[in-house]
Image (cartoon, rainbow, N blue to C red; front, side, top):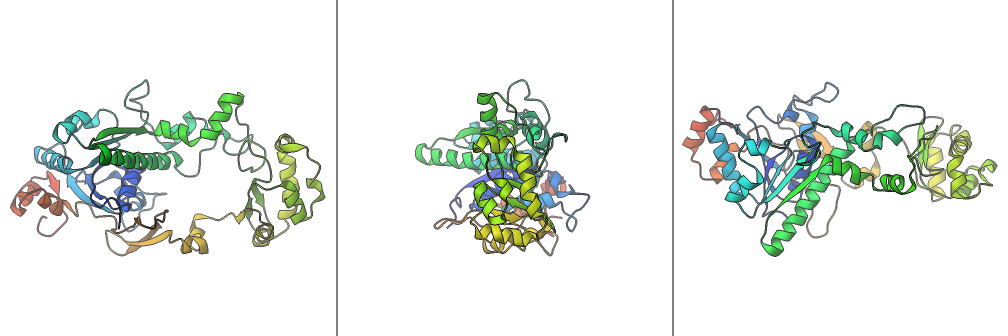
Length: 400
């Protein structure tokens, strides 16, 4: 049994920070009603590297499973009325519009709670709903730069380097979903709804709990080494090393274990963790003098046999064939809204009594408009009439 089967989410989100959070709720069983403009979520047409997947943006496919799509023009009277009816019946509303947009649409927290006082109203913004930066635009890269993350990623002498994925968006989405669950639990105990606010700036700071705590208390910025170390304040062997045919990642381990495994005399005699850190580039070169002469798989096998954390450095196209990833069911095949199928990432958590699941593929634009409005009391004739006025979008033969 999925936990949130009795929860309805009015989803006014787009892009990852919002869309990924509501998909997580859908994976837990919530009825997520995705409210899109008649032209669709911007991600439906947003390419990655100039590429769409069978005419649909990969980002849309990634974060919109387990949702129903209702296409509404919120600037029309009928479209706004339909959205209001959805919100009146919802347990949760989630949006990630910039501050002020929902107020202009008549869907602010105060507006909504007049009609649905027990709703959980989740607001995701860039910097927060108030403060000196509240009206600034922003994206993942901006928050990485603003909070120092780019300054200690990469090698010394190179420009500040962003993470290879949108870590701030991803963390924000997880925080929003997690604290929505907290609010639902609070409501279960007290009957009270509430407003939940999170933002990407807060998420970027939260993501760097170790690094910022170090900097604030020690008073030092995190300088980067010359080599591909795994982190700016950890010492070898933690890092990436060249092999004869690729690269290997080596985790934290006693340097004596690495010396014994690779038969390297030059890895002995260091006096404590401070010296290991200060001489990290030199130690990296010593380890690499061995790894660069051996095939990657051979190096990994030697390390794993010595109970050292290690892996070949793989590329995204190789991940789906990883036997443990396959065993964990982390690759799913879902129906594409335009026909055919596509592969995407799975649900990353197993639970013995309330298993999350990818039960529904990403919907086509307006695929569920007729069903959802019918559940709200609209007749077929009324739906046809307002569809003809372009206040709503429907994706079925009878409504086109």
